[in-house]
Length: 256
Image (cartoon, rainbow, N blue to C red; front, side, top):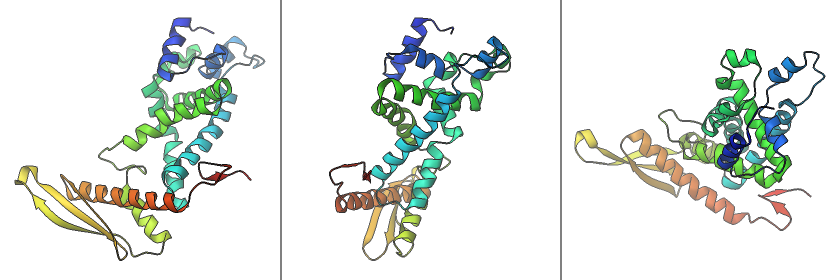
Protein backbone atom coordinates (compact mmCIF):
# COMPACT_ATOMS: atom_id res chain seq x y z
CA UNK A 1 0.00 0.00 0.00
CA UNK A 2 1.16 3.56 -0.63
CA UNK A 3 -0.07 5.77 2.18
CA UNK A 4 2.36 7.54 4.46
CA UNK A 5 1.55 7.23 8.15
CA UNK A 6 1.01 10.99 8.39
CA UNK A 7 -1.61 10.86 5.62
CA UNK A 8 -3.62 8.20 7.40
CA UNK A 9 -3.31 10.11 10.67
CA UNK A 10 -4.84 13.11 8.93
CA UNK A 11 -7.80 11.02 7.79
CA UNK A 12 -8.17 9.42 11.24
CA UNK A 13 -8.36 12.91 12.73
CA UNK A 14 -11.27 13.76 10.44
CA UNK A 15 -12.96 10.49 11.34
CA UNK A 16 -12.22 10.93 15.06
CA UNK A 17 -11.14 7.29 15.16
CA UNK A 18 -7.60 5.92 15.44
CA UNK A 19 -7.44 2.48 13.86
CA UNK A 20 -5.89 -0.31 15.85
CA UNK A 21 -5.47 -2.14 12.55
CA UNK A 22 -4.23 0.33 9.95
CA UNK A 23 -4.43 -2.31 7.23
CA UNK A 24 -8.22 -2.20 7.51
CA UNK A 25 -8.21 1.50 6.70
CA UNK A 26 -5.76 0.95 3.83
CA UNK A 27 -7.95 -1.78 2.40
CA UNK A 28 -11.10 0.35 2.61
CA UNK A 29 -9.34 2.94 0.45
CA UNK A 30 -7.93 0.52 -2.13
CA UNK A 31 -9.78 0.11 -5.43
CA UNK A 32 -9.65 -3.18 -7.32
CA UNK A 33 -7.85 -1.48 -10.23
CA UNK A 34 -4.75 -1.12 -8.06
CA UNK A 35 -4.82 -4.80 -7.08
CA UNK A 36 -5.44 -5.94 -10.66
CA UNK A 37 -2.41 -4.05 -11.93
CA UNK A 38 -0.30 -5.85 -9.34
CA UNK A 39 -1.77 -9.24 -10.26
CA UNK A 40 -3.79 -9.46 -13.51
CA UNK A 41 -4.79 -13.03 -12.62
CA UNK A 42 -6.81 -11.68 -9.67
CA UNK A 43 -5.07 -14.00 -7.21
CA UNK A 44 -3.97 -11.10 -4.99
CA UNK A 45 -6.66 -9.83 -2.62
CA UNK A 46 -6.81 -6.64 -0.64
CA UNK A 47 -9.23 -4.31 -2.42
CA UNK A 48 -12.29 -2.78 -0.77
CA UNK A 49 -15.08 -4.75 -2.50
CA UNK A 50 -15.86 -7.12 0.37
CA UNK A 51 -15.72 -4.26 2.87
CA UNK A 52 -18.12 -2.33 0.63
CA UNK A 53 -20.52 -5.30 0.70
CA UNK A 54 -20.44 -5.41 4.51
CA UNK A 55 -20.61 -1.64 4.88
CA UNK A 56 -23.77 -1.47 2.78
CA UNK A 57 -25.59 -3.72 5.28
CA UNK A 58 -24.22 -1.91 8.33
CA UNK A 59 -25.23 1.45 6.88
CA UNK A 60 -28.75 0.21 6.15
CA UNK A 61 -29.20 -1.13 9.68
CA UNK A 62 -27.90 1.96 11.47
CA UNK A 63 -29.89 4.35 9.27
CA UNK A 64 -33.07 2.29 9.79
CA UNK A 65 -32.55 2.21 13.55
CA UNK A 66 -31.96 5.97 13.67
CA UNK A 67 -35.03 6.81 11.57
CA UNK A 68 -37.33 4.64 13.70
CA UNK A 69 -35.97 6.37 16.79
CA UNK A 70 -36.12 9.91 15.37
CA UNK A 71 -39.51 9.65 13.65
CA UNK A 72 -41.81 7.30 15.59
CA UNK A 73 -44.91 8.85 13.99
CA UNK A 74 -43.79 8.28 10.40
CA UNK A 75 -45.42 5.50 8.35
CA UNK A 76 -43.24 2.84 6.73
CA UNK A 77 -43.46 4.46 3.30
CA UNK A 78 -41.98 7.73 4.50
CA UNK A 79 -39.25 5.95 6.46
CA UNK A 80 -38.36 3.97 3.34
CA UNK A 81 -38.04 7.18 1.31
CA UNK A 82 -35.78 8.74 3.92
CA UNK A 83 -33.63 5.62 4.11
CA UNK A 84 -33.43 5.40 0.32
CA UNK A 85 -32.08 8.95 0.20
CA UNK A 86 -29.54 8.45 2.99
CA UNK A 87 -28.06 5.21 1.61
CA UNK A 88 -28.12 6.28 -2.06
CA UNK A 89 -24.94 6.51 -4.12
CA UNK A 90 -25.77 10.17 -4.80
CA UNK A 91 -25.79 11.05 -1.09
CA UNK A 92 -22.82 8.84 -0.21
CA UNK A 93 -20.85 10.53 -2.98
CA UNK A 94 -21.48 13.86 -1.26
CA UNK A 95 -20.52 12.36 2.09
CA UNK A 96 -17.25 11.03 0.64
CA UNK A 97 -16.50 14.43 -0.86
CA UNK A 98 -17.06 16.14 2.50
CA UNK A 99 -14.76 13.66 4.24
CA UNK A 100 -12.21 14.09 1.46
CA UNK A 101 -11.92 10.38 0.68
CA UNK A 102 -10.85 11.05 -2.89
CA UNK A 103 -7.50 12.35 -1.67
CA UNK A 104 -6.77 9.02 0.03
CA UNK A 105 -7.94 6.47 -2.55
CA UNK A 106 -5.38 3.95 -3.81
CA UNK A 107 -6.08 3.52 -7.53
CA UNK A 108 -4.63 1.78 -10.53
CA UNK A 109 -2.91 3.94 -13.12
CA UNK A 110 -5.85 3.76 -15.51
CA UNK A 111 -8.38 4.90 -12.91
CA UNK A 112 -6.00 7.62 -11.76
CA UNK A 113 -5.63 8.96 -15.29
CA UNK A 114 -9.39 8.88 -15.95
CA UNK A 115 -10.30 10.97 -12.89
CA UNK A 116 -11.20 8.11 -10.58
CA UNK A 117 -10.72 10.21 -7.46
CA UNK A 118 -13.85 12.14 -8.30
CA UNK A 119 -16.03 9.34 -9.68
CA UNK A 120 -19.34 8.88 -7.90
CA UNK A 121 -19.20 5.08 -7.88
CA UNK A 122 -15.66 4.87 -6.51
CA UNK A 123 -16.32 7.43 -3.78
CA UNK A 124 -19.68 6.02 -2.66
CA UNK A 125 -18.20 2.50 -2.59
CA UNK A 126 -15.25 3.74 -0.54
CA UNK A 127 -17.63 5.36 1.96
CA UNK A 128 -19.38 2.02 2.49
CA UNK A 129 -16.04 0.22 2.78
CA UNK A 130 -14.91 2.76 5.36
CA UNK A 131 -18.05 2.12 7.43
CA UNK A 132 -17.23 -1.60 7.44
CA UNK A 133 -13.62 -0.92 8.42
CA UNK A 134 -14.79 1.24 11.33
CA UNK A 135 -17.18 -1.51 12.42
CA UNK A 136 -14.53 -4.24 12.34
CA UNK A 137 -11.93 -2.09 14.08
CA UNK A 138 -14.08 -0.33 16.67
CA UNK A 139 -17.45 -2.07 16.81
CA UNK A 140 -20.93 -0.86 15.97
CA UNK A 141 -20.53 2.39 17.93
CA UNK A 142 -17.54 3.46 15.83
CA UNK A 143 -19.59 2.92 12.68
CA UNK A 144 -22.60 4.67 14.22
CA UNK A 145 -20.56 7.75 15.18
CA UNK A 146 -19.39 8.14 11.60
CA UNK A 147 -22.87 7.63 10.14
CA UNK A 148 -24.48 10.03 12.62
CA UNK A 149 -21.85 12.71 11.99
CA UNK A 150 -21.36 12.42 8.23
CA UNK A 151 -24.43 10.67 6.75
CA UNK A 152 -27.50 11.44 8.87
CA UNK A 153 -26.59 14.74 10.55
CA UNK A 154 -25.81 16.77 7.40
CA UNK A 155 -28.95 15.46 5.67
CA UNK A 156 -31.18 16.55 8.55
CA UNK A 157 -29.50 19.96 8.65
CA UNK A 158 -29.71 20.53 4.87
CA UNK A 159 -32.15 23.17 3.71
CA UNK A 160 -31.63 23.65 -0.02
CA UNK A 161 -33.86 25.19 -2.64
CA UNK A 162 -34.80 21.74 -3.90
CA UNK A 163 -36.61 19.73 -1.24
CA UNK A 164 -35.09 16.35 -0.45
CA UNK A 165 -37.01 13.48 1.16
CA UNK A 166 -35.42 14.55 4.44
CA UNK A 167 -36.54 18.19 4.34
CA UNK A 168 -39.86 17.85 2.47
CA UNK A 169 -41.95 18.08 5.63
CA UNK A 170 -45.22 18.81 3.81
CA UNK A 171 -45.09 15.50 1.94
CA UNK A 172 -44.16 13.71 5.15
CA UNK A 173 -47.13 15.23 6.98
CA UNK A 174 -49.44 14.25 4.11
CA UNK A 175 -48.31 10.62 4.45
CA UNK A 176 -48.77 10.68 8.23
CA UNK A 177 -52.33 11.95 7.73
CA UNK A 178 -53.06 9.16 5.25
CA UNK A 179 -51.64 6.47 7.54
CA UNK A 180 -53.77 7.74 10.44
CA UNK A 181 -56.86 8.20 8.25
CA UNK A 182 -57.03 11.91 9.11
CA UNK A 183 -58.20 14.70 6.83
CA UNK A 184 -55.32 15.96 4.65
CA UNK A 185 -53.38 18.92 6.06
CA UNK A 186 -54.53 22.37 4.92
CA UNK A 187 -52.26 25.41 4.78
CA UNK A 188 -53.72 28.85 5.40
CA UNK A 189 -51.85 32.15 5.17
CA UNK A 190 -52.82 33.94 8.39
CA UNK A 191 -50.44 36.90 8.23
CA UNK A 192 -48.24 39.04 6.00
CA UNK A 193 -45.86 41.60 7.48
CA UNK A 194 -43.20 43.98 6.25
CA UNK A 195 -42.53 45.86 3.01
CA UNK A 196 -42.90 44.07 -0.31
CA UNK A 197 -39.19 43.30 -0.80
CA UNK A 198 -38.74 41.76 2.67
CA UNK A 199 -42.23 40.42 3.34
CA UNK A 200 -42.67 37.77 6.04
CA UNK A 201 -45.52 35.27 5.70
CA UNK A 202 -47.18 33.36 8.53
CA UNK A 203 -48.82 30.07 7.59
CA UNK A 204 -50.97 27.83 9.75
CA UNK A 205 -51.25 24.11 9.01
CA UNK A 206 -54.46 22.39 10.11
CA UNK A 207 -54.96 18.64 10.25
CA UNK A 208 -57.87 16.82 11.81
CA UNK A 209 -59.96 18.62 14.43
CA UNK A 210 -57.36 20.08 16.77
CA UNK A 211 -53.92 19.64 15.21
CA UNK A 212 -52.54 23.03 14.23
CA UNK A 213 -49.15 24.76 14.09
CA UNK A 214 -47.97 28.13 12.81
CA UNK A 215 -44.66 29.28 11.37
CA UNK A 216 -43.25 32.28 9.53
CA UNK A 217 -40.85 32.59 6.62
CA UNK A 218 -39.78 34.76 3.67
CA UNK A 219 -42.17 32.88 1.36
CA UNK A 220 -45.44 31.01 1.68
CA UNK A 221 -43.65 27.81 0.70
CA UNK A 222 -40.94 28.08 3.35
CA UNK A 223 -43.46 29.07 6.03
CA UNK A 224 -45.63 26.08 5.11
CA UNK A 225 -42.66 23.73 5.31
CA UNK A 226 -41.72 25.10 8.74
CA UNK A 227 -45.30 24.74 9.99
CA UNK A 228 -45.40 21.15 8.74
CA UNK A 229 -42.06 20.48 10.42
CA UNK A 230 -43.35 21.81 13.75
CA UNK A 231 -46.48 19.67 13.57
CA UNK A 232 -44.43 16.60 12.67
CA UNK A 233 -42.13 17.23 15.63
CA UNK A 234 -45.17 17.46 17.88
CA UNK A 235 -46.59 14.20 16.51
CA UNK A 236 -43.23 12.44 16.88
CA UNK A 237 -42.91 13.62 20.48
CA UNK A 238 -46.42 12.38 21.27
CA UNK A 239 -45.75 9.03 19.58
CA UNK A 240 -42.49 8.61 21.47
CA UNK A 241 -44.19 9.41 24.79
CA UNK A 242 -46.97 6.91 24.11
CA UNK A 243 -44.57 4.10 23.20
CA UNK A 244 -41.72 3.88 25.72
CA UNK A 245 -38.96 1.43 24.83
CA UNK A 246 -39.16 -1.67 27.05
CA UNK A 247 -36.06 -3.16 28.59
CA UNK A 248 -34.21 -5.42 26.17
CA UNK A 249 -34.97 -3.34 23.10
CA UNK A 250 -32.60 -1.10 21.16
CA UNK A 251 -33.91 2.06 19.52
CA UNK A 252 -37.47 0.78 19.67
CA UNK A 253 -36.59 -2.44 17.83
CA UNK A 254 -36.99 -5.73 19.66
CA UNK A 255 -34.62 -8.59 18.99
CA UNK A 256 -36.64 -11.19 20.91
